[in-house]
Image 1 (spheres, one colour):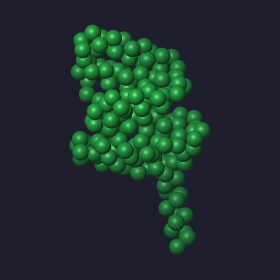
Image 2 (cartoon, rainbow, N blue to C red; image 1 turned 180 degrees about the vertical axis):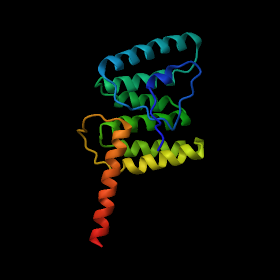
Image 3 (tube, rainbow, N blue to C red; image 1 turned 135 degrees about the horizontal axis):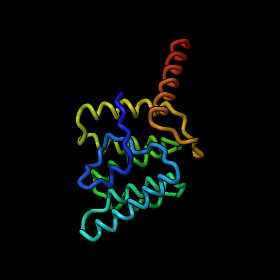
Length: 174
């Protein structure tokens, strides 16, 4: 499976189109998250002065806030309410990814909702890559407390092992 991981700073690049197929939840250390948050705030000011949309800057700030340990539920809901349908798909995917990176409860619901909303917008290769990725990630045990953040490749490797062991145990039970 190709690596779809992107640095969340790509959301702040001029004229950049956020990719619905990308993985924006690679763990960030605190200094990097602070840099991302500062860049997002600068971008917000720049966009406000131009009268342009702020969604990508707000999304980058949400990602930074998550890695800084802030409770982002309220910010997520506020951004979701203000977003249009395509933005809601990306927001749900990113929020689900952030939760999944720490194996927190609710991750699969957001990933499913985001994927459903994004499906009509995805090119076939991206559609099937995300479908396979989400199918594997559903094998991971999630909890309210979560766990140590993991990169996508590590999450997928763990999910693959769990999937193989589950299938093997199912065959033995027959």
